[in-house]
Length: 177
Image (cartoon, rainbow, N blue to C red; front, side, top):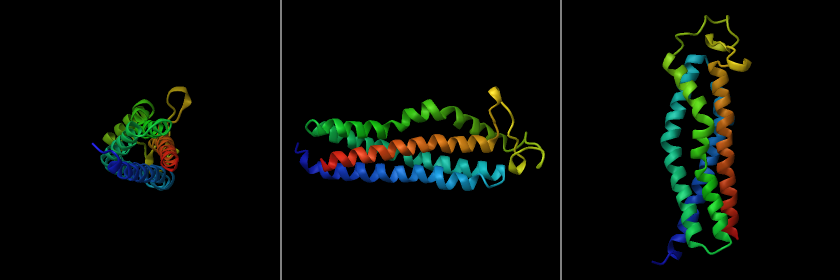
């Protein structure tokens, strides 16, 4: 099979998807989440859930396509460029284990808050958060309020965006080599 016909489409697919996904992830963390934090807690949680659900449906499959394209390029390209494409693929795919290792706990806590839908929140003005949310002190004095958790989620998600951006830069470097 002649792999040269697939080389440019694979490059285009990998670069386009990894840069787009990077932009989407970084925009969620830097533009969307700060606006959600201005909302009352129950609304913020609903909006976060909607963003999380639609993002999960789109970002995960597209990340797998982009990383597969990078790995394909790594397979069909001679050294030393093959290693560079392999690194781009690993960085792109790396958001999956990153999510499991670093974000699963926070995701679970926020989902718990979503399920509660404010049942255990104190009256507005009694806590430090808006919308009746309490920034309660948890283990080690860390805040465990919904707004804190969503803000922390944005910080962790920013790491995924940086990984995708790095994947794009490495992939572009390989393509221009």
